[in-house]
Image 1 (cartoon, helix red, strand yellow):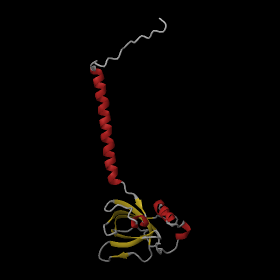
Image 2 (tube, helix red, strand yellow):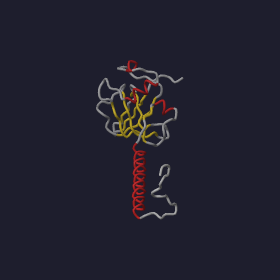
Image 3 (cartoon, one colour):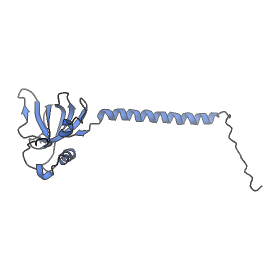
Image 4 (cartoon, rainbow, N blue to C red):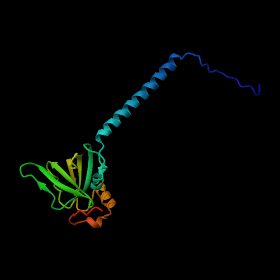
Length: 174
């Protein structure tokens, strides 16, 4: 008959769920629960391993978290490296030409670590404002500048020509 719609399987709200449907629903809900647990564990693991980059200016302004793993970088200030002859303790200043960051490190510095060169340090900022480094990463050739350091220097108003092969002296903050 034209114009007549035949409903083959009417939907009944009070129809009990069949065992097959119940099994499919259980599988889907189980998969969703496993996916949620996997995402949660991944985010928890990443939270402990993510360390953001901060320049000395950002640290001086208080943008960096205290007692949490971060990366900081800039240029090693000329004449600032102080080594303890009785241990592997080293202290030096990292600058972005606007602010300076005092870094304390206990360990062997990379062979390419030099005053006036770019460096990235990984560690924690202490409550007294010193950076306690766990790792010191030096640039690997005379033309390379870590992207984070390069960006921090550009943000401070310096171009690569301004700091290439020149001694580092911090500018005064306005």
